[in-house]
Amino acid sequence: MAATIQHPSSATTVFLDQPPSCLEFCPEAPDHFIVGTYLLSENKTEDGEIEQTKIGSIQLWKLDPVSNALSQIQRIAVPYAVFDLHFHPKHKNLFAIASSVGTVSLFEVSANSSAGDDASPSVTQLWTQQVHEDPSIPALFLAWAPEHWFPNTSADGFAVTFSDSRTAVFGTEGDIREEGGLVEWGTFEAKQMIEVWFVALSTPSTTADNQNASKIPFMFTGNDFGSLHTRRFDNIAELDDPNEHISPMLVEHDDRARHHTAGVTAILPLEVPLVGDAPVLLTGSYDEGLRVYHATRRGEVLAEQGLDGGVWRLQLLSTTQVPESADPSHVTTWSFLVLASCMHAGTRLVRVTCSQQDGTSEWGIEVLAKFTEHESMNYASGVWQGTKVGLGEQITMQKRQVYKYIRA
Image (cartoon, rainbow, N blue to C red; front, side):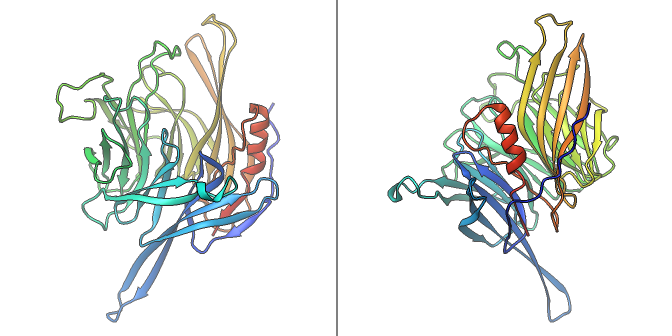
């Protein structure tokens, strides 16, 4: 029986000085979050031509979970639009941004130890690197490499996409904080000049037994034509050529927009083993659909749900696996709680489920809550995790707190 969809109202609303384009809570300072902004200005020249200028900012905000108050702690103005930001998966006080001038910048969130325990953290820029030789080509999205994605376990880096169809991988075998240590390790060109809105890097397991399973490096990209591109790499532990830093590509295929009727704008690899030697993803699209997608050569949609707005971003909040029995003929269920930013339709809280039995899987998508007070486009949503609590209490908090939002 489907649960009643909740329609909560906002507890606090603050209007920013510039439109927000991305947002993430700080893992090391859970009551604080970072917002990236983007402001486009148009001026008419003496010749009558329209000249566009993009500027933005990095903003540190604090949420008081008791009073629901939102307060800006710090604002760093930048001479470009901030299109994307993500915290590092291992060094959780670091985050990187992708910009409209083809650069990536690394920032650090640090505590002010001299000001006492109640002091708010501060943001410091560590470096900026040009990741596209043409500053007129914007960097659209950035994804940090997860553990085991690079053959060298000491390597660190990210993939970044651009508006000219390129996807590039940058990495270092040193400290990611050190300026100048980042090198381009791989470039992946598309056949057509089109925006690549999203890249996801993942290392799904070959079997459900994580202790003995192999980790397979994958790269997924989605472009403005509605195509989802899958690249699978070898999982060798060591490369023969010291000048190579990415494993050889074993499989590459594009679904040629068979399943998305508009641009693919979000890709979330799900934490389930490969199914038929291919991974399972969640995808979001301008066509307003959320899909459970089996990334085979031609692609296959396992479940689909319309969310009433372009699905711009997806965030995994929790994963639950419940094996009913050690006997493989019995049912194993998976449950994923997902937050979706739906552009003109606001925010959705969604539960994605999977039941596996006798080698077959049945997937479902259920909308649990809708927040629709947005008066403009919703490009980012975040969840206040709070302190460590039980899963049931945490989910309740998430449902309640996610709707304390910032909008332009």
